[in-house]
Structures are given as structure tokens and as C-alpha cells.
Amino acid sequence: METVTTAVYTVIGPSPITGFVVFALFSFWGGYLFYRAFCIGLPGGDRRRYAVLVFLLPSLLFWPSSIGKEAWLYFFLGLSAYGVARFFRHGAQGLVPVALGIVGTMVVRPHIAVLVVVALVAAQIARPSSPSPTAMLTKVMGVAAMVATAVVLAGQSAEFLELEEVTWEGLASEIEERSDLASQGGSEFESTPVTSPLQLPAAALTVMFRPFPYEASNVQLLVQSLEGLMLLVLLVGARHRLRALPRLMRTTPFLTFAVVYVLGFVWAFSGIGNFGILARQRVLMLPLLLVVLALPAIIEVRKKRPGTPRGATRSAASVR
Image (cartoon, rainbow, N blue to C red):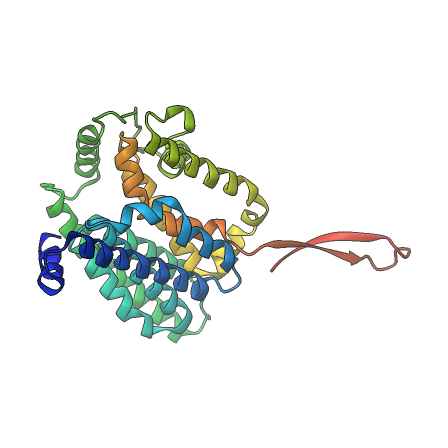
């Protein structure tokens, strides 16, 4: 990031204000790419709701808009999501933005790039395909190529995290050690790194929505807590939409990609015990969480039952 900032200042001159504008543009175009990915990958989704959230959510306006790695990562994650959506909708033409997005993410945070590739592999496996041998062979080859990419990135991540060996025990130990380092300062709390699936719901609540208002120790955390509370209310209010989530995941690989990435992010960042650090890192997950909050609306349709008297109806749910 020092090299990137130096390059920016070489072009625009040593002006911090102009530098902030440049990095804010990174953030804006990242948000736009996330929006385009949503429109392409989930064409029946609630575009207005997603646009309002991804462009106006306070965290997404604040954290990636300053000079630093969040703006860079936000842009390249948006580019990755855009490429994934195009890949599943239009085929190989989406691979170029996917590759560029993964490379741009990898040079700053290789482990985030691993999450992207793992989510892409899961979506490719779950992707519906015709039973023809050619289609099956293409799907298997695609999964194999993605798994190979994930292995390479895992090696880069191990080097970045200074792991001596790429094992579950080594990774868990490193996450716990880094969690202890992150659990310092005035915003620390008792975190619980995910070591079993049973711990995932509690970790998801923490990573996605905390701090709660009563846990806020300053004005900035209070604003963050109100945002988290709003997202939690939206999630509860969208429960009728969420009923269609399992079915949509079987037919919409971009949605599978978003869900798997969010779950992987929750696992990877569940050990952070500092609300300030967690709020800043969360912006790299929120745009894909918002995909779930903007699922197609379910409309209650009244249908007349055959053989029933006039006026007698039954209710059926349909997805818009």
C-alpha cells in the first residue's frame, strides 16, 4: 500500500486531500461493481434496497473512503464479485475480472483472496448443469482449476501469516494468537473463535452485528452499534424472503458464492476481540451479506381452489 500511495502521489502531487479523493473513488467504484454484480447475479433481487444499502450504509461510506488498504480491497473485491456474477451468467468472459480481482486482493490480503476462491469453488460445485457428458466434464475441469488456484493462494496465505505448515492445527493456533493481539485497546471484548459448527451462529451474530448499543463505549461505536441493530432488524424483517434462500441457492450460483463467502469470513474473523478492528474489517464482508437482505420479495397470491364456492380462496407464495 505504501507503493500504491507513492504512485498516486507521483501522479497527483503530495496532496493528502486529493489522495483521499482518489482512494474514495476506489471505494465508490468498488460499491458500483458490487451493485452491478448483484444485478447480474441475482436479476430478480430487490435492486433498490441493495443500492440504498451498499451506497449509503455508514460503514461502507466511512471505512473504505480513506487512504489505506480498505479502499483497495473494497474495489478489488467488488471486481471479483462482478466477475463471478458474469462468469455464472455469461460464461468465460467473467474470468478476466475474477482473475484481476483475486490478484488485486492477494497482494494485500492473500487469505481474503482464498475466501473468494473457496466461495467460487462451492458455487461452481452447486451450480446446476445439464446431464450431458460435455457439460459435466466442463464443470469438473472448472472445479479442478479453481481448487488448484485455492491451493496456490493457501500457500501464499501461509507465508503471509508466517505459518510453518499449512494444517488445521497450525491455522487455528495462528488465528488464536492474532486474536489475542487484536483483543487490546479500549474496545476489547471476549471473543470466541469458531472451532466447531455449533459455534457458528454466535460468531455470526458477533461478526455481522456487534457491538450492541449497550456495549458502545464511545460515539463512534454507538453509531456502529445502531447500524448493526438496523441490519439485524432488516434481517428479521426479511425472514419471509429468507424462506426462499435454500431454493434460490440451488438455482443461483452467485447467491451461493455470497453465502459461502460470508460464512467463511465469519469463521476467519470470529477471533477478533476488538469492536473497532471488527467494524473496519467487516466492510469486506457487508456487500455480500446485503445480497441476502435483498432477496426477491415473496408475494402472497390468492388462487381459487377448483370445485370450491365463489369467494373461497387459498394462499400460495410466489417469488417476484
